[in-house]
Length: 330
Image 1 (cartoon, rainbow, N blue to C red):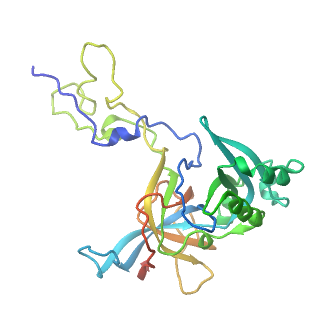
Image 2: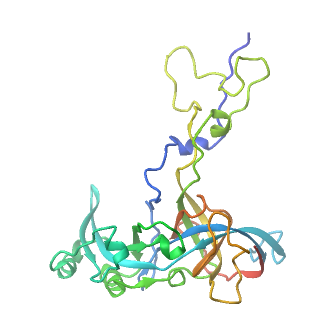
């Protein structure tokens, strides 16, 4: 018999190892861009995945073979109800990292949030926070969104942090302070034609073998007892299996962040000019109601899943061009 072949996984697949189940249905955003601007701005919003459409547009990318020609691309519809600014969180920073110094919450928080999550202000929290601004390095807005605002059945709201960037710490604190208890729409954070990053939990596929999970090549006919297994787990000595060897296990339901998704449409279903709902609504979701956006390309996760939108952190363009949409094929 010849030497045993070690079937390697596809290139780049080890970047996501180990592939375990996500701890929560809500994706975490671990990195934020720094906005060099005088006025502060909240850098995140969220939506719920509804379905897919086809976008017929004019390709406005310069120096490409298809520039100026008609382009048909996939679009993902996200229902983006307004997010509620619940509070302010300030972080100090030392050699051990970031440390939460204070939390300030709005006075009149809706019942659908207080019923599920306890958010209480300590006495003098606002005055205490303003005194400690000197040691604060980052200001975050605590925002909340109810799935029921998107037409879903889930009662428990999603509450997460969104970085405030631009200006100094005092301006950032004042900006969020003025927004406490108010709702912010998607068009107040992102503009049409801008590019965002999306974070979500991918569609779960359960326990899968090495062929589907890692893309390992099937073995030759009659070469071994099995066909859909790895040819070798490693050498006889040392008697250990390296982490680089493809193994069966959990596939899907992982946290993933995808970069540079362009906003092609920002609209509202009350506007008669834009028709976004197919007859009977989207499969597994239903009718889109209220604010929505259409992103170019695909988005991780299954329908009805929370999708977090963050300001672009890579390849930030110098100017934002509004897309020339000819038609949306539902």
